[in-house]
Structures are given as structure tokens and as C-alpha cells.
Amino acid sequence: MTTPPAYGGKGRERRRHARVQKQLLVTLWPERENPSPPDDPQRVIGRSLDISVGGILVDSPRAFPVGARLSMLLTIQTPDGLERVPVSGSVVRVGNPGFGIKFDTLSPRALTVLLEITVASMGGGKAD
Image (cartoon, rainbow, N blue to C red; front, side):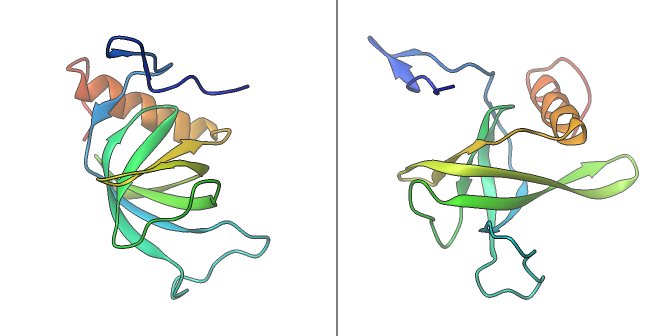
């Protein structure tokens, strides 16, 4: 399946998923066979600029090149405290600000969290 361009003719958005501005702490590192240790120097801490069920725009001190496959932890506030939700994806664009990552297949928990964030940020519920 291919992703449509972000914008199609005359400034109209052609995204498949609602995108919302939301700042989350995001820990990123290159995907590889063996899990990355927490002190891996390739781990980067950034923040999301916007997010959807389809992907995330991240601002960080280091950008990864287009095509890079990344593992990520999204840190979200829940009623029970902070939760780190693992997701993975591929860098699809590098710009200013940030770089865009398209999510791979999402776990049920990751999908639930992303839907809650999107709905709450659009004024339809409560999630932080």
C-alpha cells in the first residue's frame, strides 16, 4: 500500500488519518535485530510536533535519513502515570521543522493510544 502525498492540488490535504498537534516525548533509535540498550548512543530524544494513527512528525537534535527504519517509545500521560508505548516506522520525509515517520503495523495498544490522542485533541474526549 502506498501513502498518498500530504497535499494534493490547490492546498487540499490528502492524508488518510486525522492529524493533530500534540507534543509527546519520543525516544527513537535505528531498528535492528537486537534490542537497543537504554544507554545506546544512537538513541535520540525528541518531541512530536503532530501525530496521527498513520504517523508522527518529530523534532529532535538529530534527524534520520529518508528510508531509515526506526523503533520508538511514545511517552504519554495516563490516569495511572506515564506510559511508554512502543511503535516502529520509516522516515518518509526530512524537513524543517522535524522529520516525518510513517508508522508500521500498530499493536492494539498503540492503535488505542493513538486514537485516544487524536479524538481528545479534536475535542471529542479526554486523553492527555
